Image: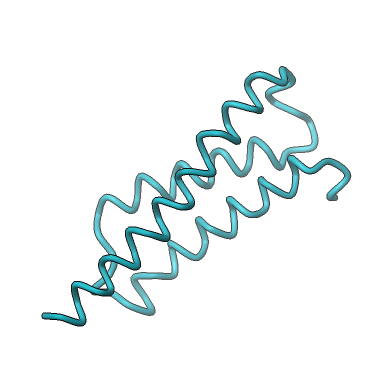
Length: 90
């Protein structure tokens, strides 16, 4: 399953998408409609990187997916942290 490190990155993206999907149930005040775009992006990139059939075989495309998904995860974490700080002060 984790023969390739790209599979691990795909798994991390899928877990990040599932965590973001659970956010409206745990803390509904922190969830915004724009998070749905991030959920779809995480699931799509994660499934592409996790697939065993290698939809994208070219290394440059895989590198682009990795380089685009890592800032997306950090953006999501920072965005949720800032939202939680704003809700505490209100």
